[in-house]
Length: 291
Image (cartoon, rainbow, N blue to C red; front, side, top):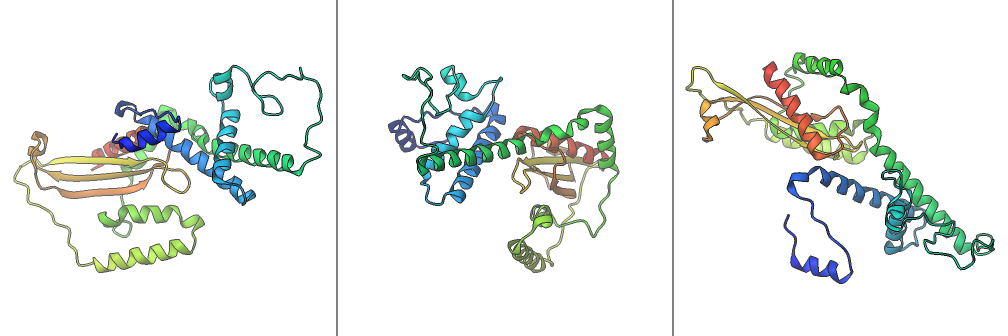
């Protein structure tokens, strides 16, 4: 990906290592994005509990909680890096006291009590974000072949009525608003009115069906997906099916007449952008055979 040289110099001056994610390992992008989301959620929880906390301090506490509470192959990142876990005071090095009991400031200084409270808040926010990422395991029954066949039949037998069919240019926006209907706010009402106003302004637009010269037209499908961008962490698939000429297979630019389009939530939880795109392609294939 493109990155400016000034950004590289800025990070190098502060001894920040930057690792690129190769294009063939695009599923790692979702892991990086969720790590950023976890850090932001933890910093938000810390600042809401202690408004006087600085951004640098909130970031440091959130990073420490992640490195201390996260688990990879049975060990935390701190244990992988230093070969040991921190003691009760958060120290990683050898103590000169040789484990002699000492009186801490926990009961003496209020500042130490605020420190403990901040770490508890950070670790609690991290565990909440971690539990959201593990919700995908609740749908393990969908991995069985019978369940997959059942879902495929339900998809292929479903037909949208004219009342349920939304114009292609508004399909994605309507799907996103529907996902917010169970916990909507005033902003969702405003967005709905804006979308309705745009739809009424475009009510005179017509859907063009092109003339096909071939005796046997080609039915083609396109699919795409967006990962973890819904309010509940779900993903969205976009499907478009149209009939056109066989010249499309030769790479020619040909007119395409829309037959079916859909922008809806993927029922299963996707752990990466690659998984979301795979589910969208499978659903598009089912819809293609149904057409």
